[in-house]
Image (cartoon, rainbow, N blue to C red; front, side, top):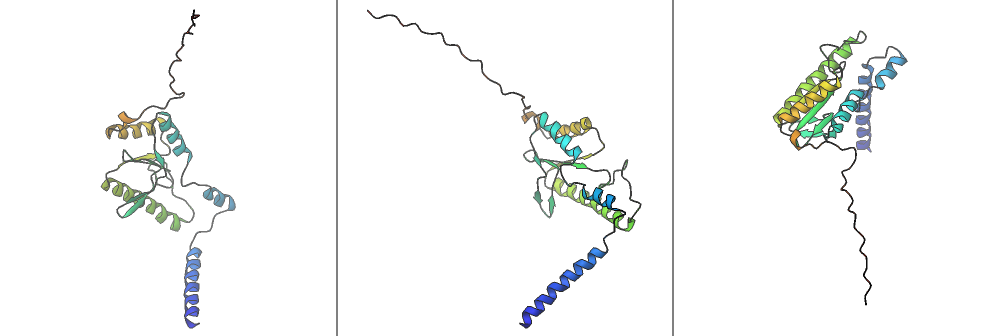
Length: 190
């Protein structure tokens, strides 16, 4: 019984420690801001969906949000061309500190500054791990035009020699012309 009581106290201690860690989490400015932040997606963002649709329309096939287990790192590119070893990331301006459009929050800076810095550090570590594993990395900002983003991805695919293997998608399957057979007239047998 004493052993069970000790384990119970240890588990309670772990829970108490995790609850105190939550106390350091910043309080939202208002419920609307909280709902806005909860609505941010990790995958399938609008810029990512637009890029995937455009690449698919050009005949490229890929994996989305594909988990790569690399030496010492796990990486999840937004779009992965596994056979071609090309990883594409569509980075949000706020979350990845865009030099043009990235903004620093005015509230809870003690929380946001290190968090955003860790995001950038994680991006650099992912780039290094992918490069060490022989992958080409394409990073596209969400504010870039769709045409520029597609051109960047296609340029890397072309440089890797993969674009020549891609077949453009067809709206309708190619069908052979039907063969018209002439009816055979039977001759009466005498």
